[in-house]
Length: 102
Image (cartoon, rainbow, N blue to C red; front, side, top):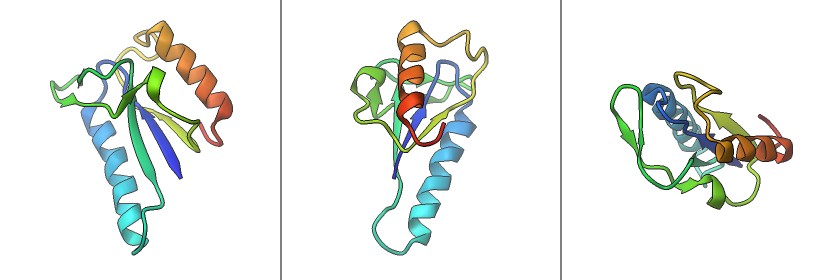
């Protein structure tokens, strides 16, 4: 199952890391092939600076995120939705309409 996690500017680093840990642990508990594929998506491929100063390197940008995910998660940040660029907002609208869960 493909999970897309959007990392907005000024994201809460703990939330981004925590979501990753949840899906990693779920895959480990399956005792077999990974069930969840988590991709970290950002406005561009550059590192994203979190509100705490932590820097996260996304897997891809909104223009290269691939097929629609089963689930779309938007990480929390200060200023949502005001801080989403037009490209990020457009990607969220399009992707949410195609994802099974948003």
